[in-house]
Length: 126
Figure 1 (cartoon, helix red, strand yellow):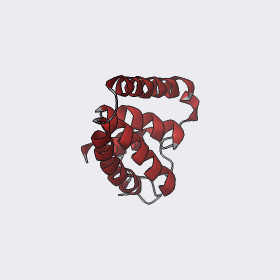
Figure 2 (figure 1 turned 45 degrees about the horizontal axis):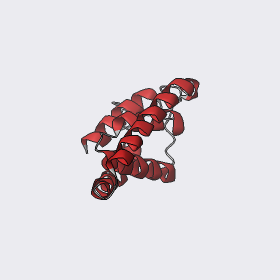
Figure 3 (figure 1 turned 30 degrees about the horizontal axis):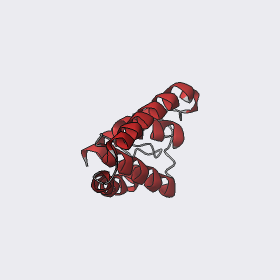
Figure 4 (figure 1 turned 90 degrees about the vertical axis):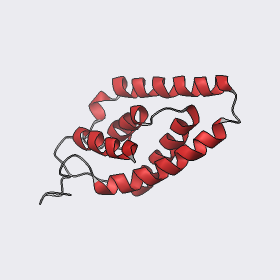
């Protein structure tokens, strides 16, 4: 739902949710299936890499966030790619994808903070 200026109400952007959630859910099942063929040390290294990359993005790209209250520009191709990538790797290592999805949405896709938090909660709930 959006107000008259096009800003998502309640922190969840429906278009972003629809672009992120289905690919993320499907890819997470794919990653979980593939994980049984991957050496455990590779899975541990993948998880450590995800956590490190999320931390680096959060610390280094802090000034790259979109301003709150503006309209959300959803690039569907980028959103589907981000959802698929995060979902696959999260399924591969058995982690919830939100800890990596939030920095990707904030700094990579430049989604405002309130919309990032609300939409990521809805995506992870799906």
